[in-house]
Amino acid sequence: MKNLALSQRANRMPASPIRKLIPLANAARKRGVTIYPLNIGQPDIHTPEPVREAIRSFDQKVLAYSPSPGEDYLLEAFAAYYKQNQIPLEPEEIIVTTGGSESIFFAYLAICDPGDEVIVFEPFYTNYNGMAFETNVTLKALTTYAEDGFQLPAMDVIEKAITPKTRGILICNPNNPTGTIYPRQTLEGLGYLVKKHNIFLLADEVYREFTYDGLSHTSIMQIPGLEEHAILLDSVSKRYSACGARIGTICSKNKAVVDACLRFAQARLSSPTVEQWASRAGLMMDPSYFKPILEEYQRRRDAVMTGLAAIPGAVCKTPTGAFYVIVKLPIKDAELFARWLLTDFQADGESVLVAPAAGFYANPGLGKDEIRISYVLEVEKLNRAMKALAAGVKQFQKIEGHPKAENVAVA
Image (cartoon, rainbow, N blue to C red; front, side, top):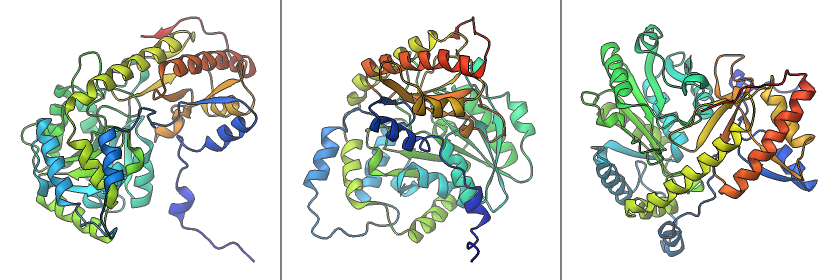
């Protein structure tokens, strides 16, 4: 009997570069190897006590559906949080989603028909690609480069990529996977383009609070004149170290966008009920909560950068936001390298799990010598992980027959 045929969509759906090597890591652990997970943005910082206490004290007698746009108390809490961050949004301009991933999904569905294009900047968060496959949206990727800190291309380059099929431009700021923060001038340039061509500007601002070196974040909702064009995508996952809560938002002052997203939200019924109550507790916390958290992440970033500086030929500018870095390594095949680290390598009984960066690109052949590192482990573990990574690169170069790199390119 022939196998039943799957859809073209199913066959083309890419595996996550972040999660696909986890079985190899688990197998290595069973062999007794200590594996430091640098592949996924899962913080080890404890979820704040008010969030955990809200879950413990939840006493609804029937665990019922929540309203499709979200519970009123959570919409009000999000609106207050946004206003606290100088982002002018009202509760009726917010839809609660099942994580930030669903907000991307809703945004594609709301603004694109099958075959329409959204401009993105690679490397980009891999779920942008997965959601595009699911919705038959075409991502038109413009490449950014490690050598200049993954800053966006010039505005005239971006404008040339706009076609009659273009429905929006999508950015992540601060950026996952590069850690880049885009300055206000860049956002104003994008705002000019979307108004000129009557398209949307979508901004994933999940890492809003995670900025370092005295830098600050600018939201697209703070750029004047974008009321009809701006769509904000958000999540509590990283903000409160609550990735399992699966609560996000999609926000816009464009009433038609919000109405469309509400209908999509009705089709999936509702977001998690208990987690909405817990998210409210997080949003109500004093902003001073973030100060020691950011100081800790900056220490972690610095530990990673020190470790990368010990790898001759590594190319990487110091990231200024989020908790990721893309590094170009002096190797030929990062996919093979990442697998080898888990199957054939250990240094003093330790190795690392990293995400090969090719999966963060849309254009074939790019990112083959790059990996993404997520610095969500405590400094001592990061120091050991980076020592193992450096030893791994040195040994893998001999296997590849790679010429010895001489110049340290980490800045």
